[in-house]
Image (cartoon, rainbow over the protein chains, first blue to last red):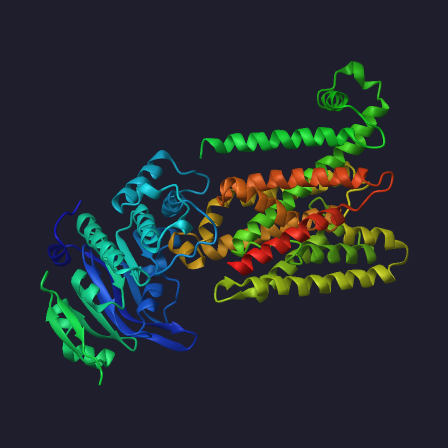
Length: 273
Length: 340
């Protein structure tokens, strides 16, 4: 198992996802245009951009929910269409913004659902599946409420359960769609600490869509800024979060300072007149 | 929790068995439970000596009351598991084959077949059952297509579509009833729902469809659980959503339509049974489906008992009884949903 730090693995280990010349959208309206980028093993890539820039559409394209109108996506070198949904789910786990809970499953039940892509039709979950699920809950610190119904949990607790479910899939790639947008500040930090930890420890490739520029800058190795469905700029946070880029993409005046804790670029909003 | 599951199932099955034996004893001629069990044992494990002496008790239990009770079991199980599956499938607690017009559609199919005097057999089903099944399935597809918006099924659209399609089917059925001439009595049966004069033929007709339908929904219980998270998340967890939905919807429609084709419309069983069970065992379909089937069977055996005895020697159509029970419960669900 890779235990190297993110910076090293991003450079040394293979490509998890390779997006080539991708365009896609809804009906006739293209949302993403001519996207090309690689996601590396052990790398945490933050996708940022204003609303409507195509951030969430990217996640749907990467999980094959949305068909491509042009280009292709390679998962470990093979076109995504050549995989079955089960095979994809064994490699790629998705953490959504919000999980609807209309029926009262326990947290453990929900995490066990992460084992779905590994189970054969007539086979029940065995003790090893249960062990994997419990281990995932241990790592996201939600063992304490394993028997509580998920709809009774707070937003932060529920999201930790969902991350445990993603880990129970034993994926090599994590895709996150605004994972903290409904959470309080303390839970946002908690969730990102956790993500950074699993990314480094298991060498996972992580792609995280977020509208929170400062969080993304703090935690991601690399940022990709989208504007109107195209990649505006892509690189390490200190090259991406600049006054000029933010003015051009978000049409907002900001000052960029260095975090006193980590040195990562952080933006300060300039109020209007 | 996992340890308790088999126990709950066995316990419910035992209660169901006891209810069946009791129900078979009650009627114009009262037969004590011991005698009922004796008849069952004699017929299941015949010992040459008894072959010759077929008593009246034997005939009543084996030829009349047993097939009727078995039908109540099968129909209750079929309607309840069908309703339970639909509630998960549509992510909507109000879904039920009766409310969604599937039963009405199936009844219309049956009426058409009777009126046109269609007579053929296919796969062990007669024309009436096939027509009931096809119309039930067609209504299911129409209701599904109409009420789906952006991957979710909204309660109001689902209910209104079901009501509209169901009303349309019922009015066609009523029209044929009025024009029906000598078939009138037979046609009325489909609208009211009844188990009167049902014999072994009907049991054999329903059994394979109930068994296969139930087996399918049990095998897909895990996928059904995951579908509760929504199509997108289910797909991201490796479930082939479109395929699974097609299989489940067909199985649920098949269960409901097969039940209607032998008993006519018996409403609300698919709503009552799964909800009662959900309160006890929770939302996991791996336990919910078999428990709902058992509870639905129990519900219908008891309802049939009341239907047969409450106004004896006259008989109350069982559909009237289940609707009297189910409609207030439906209102309660509606009230609760509006509050949330």
